[in-house]
Length: 373
Image 1 (cartoon, rainbow, N blue to C red):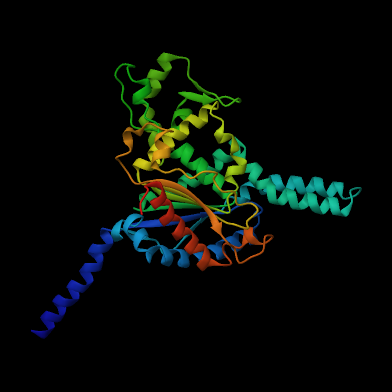
Image 2 (image 1 turned 90 degrees about the vertical axis):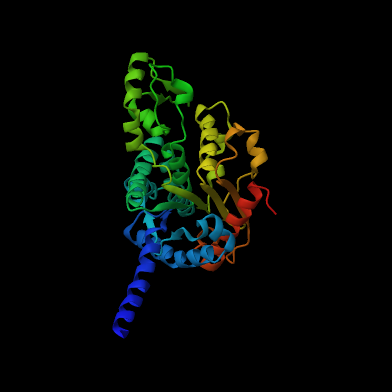
């Protein structure tokens, strides 16, 4: 009798975790590197730093009651213990080698101080400039998309964490890959065709539209071709866009995004009109976009004005505001233990402070956006 009871007890104990695991969605954190990391050694340093930071960030977030309730949906979502890294530094290394060759040639007649400054600037800024070129960016975000889909097909959501110039990639990923465009509102009436919400990359890769060199979004002038392409657009959406629910959030840190993307305030550029669709999608699909910078970080540029839900209503159609709990917020008021010179590289050196800054930023951002006490 005792053996039977013991067997039943063991079965019960083993079955509870299995049942719980089946009903928990893993949340995979994917960390993206920044500029001036182009070698095997720099990839190892970046990976080692992330493996050091991630346990602190996981613990800090999970121990916050507010984060547990909102981001982690009362325990229905669990942060994966193993972080993932997306290292794009090798993609730009060949171009950087070309710059170094030119610098070496100049060393014959250029003063040493000038050479030192040139070398510093080229290595710090090269990757940030390189990845902003559309053909380079597209290749990088397509590679990142493969990682996002891989985790999605494993039953996981992802949070993208972009360091420094890596924040350009996370932002462009949202712009190009989130299915925030509802073409039924614009193009229907063409033989009654209806399509699923889609993303910019699906529209351009299908041939329905292109971006011009002066920032215009130009539709295919052949209406018959557009009708034909519409019939196959869902196929392109499946190939090119992030599945709904795949991306849970974005955390950018040490980010110069506001400096390099200052043209996002230019409302004459058609791409900027898409921001309204993006904001709507983030809000409706519970996606957060958080930017955190140490106050001393010379490359950490805060977003000028944080928006709350009332501010957003003046920017986009308010009809969707009853749905979703997504938000966006910038926090750059935390002092780094490092000096001004070292602040940009100090995020991994002080993992506890970094983790707390992100957690506090999430809580503050959510409450600020929804005007909670």
